[in-house]
Length: 139
Image (cartoon, rainbow, N blue to C red; front, side):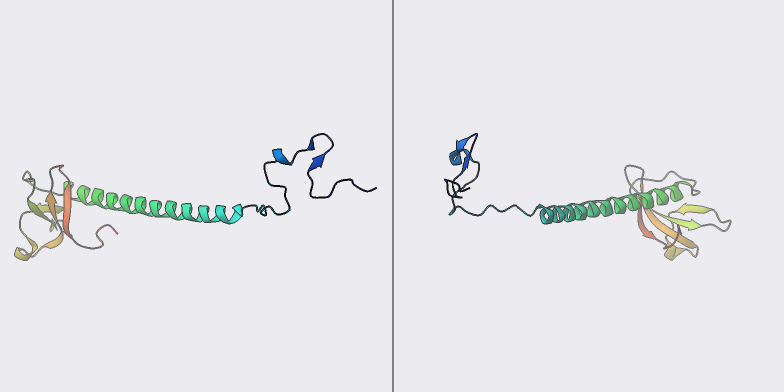
């Protein structure tokens, strides 16, 4: 059985000649229809997004660690023994006492022969800012 129409003619029994309503070109000289490679696009997108999430996670982890350090230092200073009301903006020094209890003083480590833990400044939020510290205090 032989067809009456050539292969490059768009024809169907129910629609007839319908090349003009097709969403793509049906001419032999028309550009080639290429399907986009979505797998590589998705993998590049996933890789980019994962790097962004990892960076954000590392930033949050660093912020959390800094916050915990601030909390530990503030707890250490507030639990220390001192018999005066600290003034905002003044510099104070934290020492280990002879009895093993930490105490806060205005005397600098250069003027005194005591075990120095750190130097702090009280800010307006009543938070102790670490100016100088002894390493490995919390380990």
